[in-house]
Length: 77
Image 1: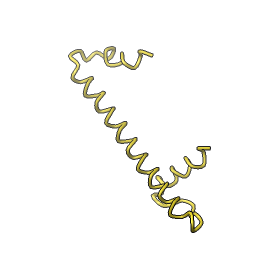
Image 2: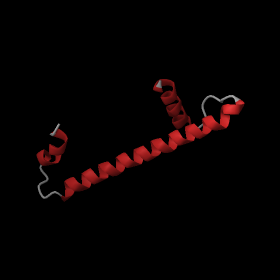
Image 3: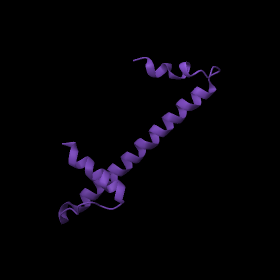
Image 4: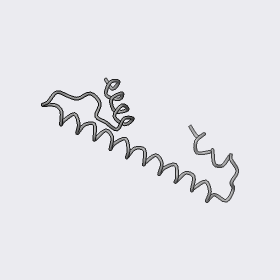
């Protein structure tokens, strides 16, 4: 059931406008949901960037800068 909702989120994010205008009584509620979706997306993106920064920092702090030791954590699975 996520398909149309996801497409809407991306449309909103790309255009920066409200996509499809909702009917009057549902309008403000739909807008709040879109706003929450945008905030949620932004937070998620920031979190990912922070985690990547931590990984990069950790790899730089490591005495041995051999590629193998940097990749090890990702190959454990």
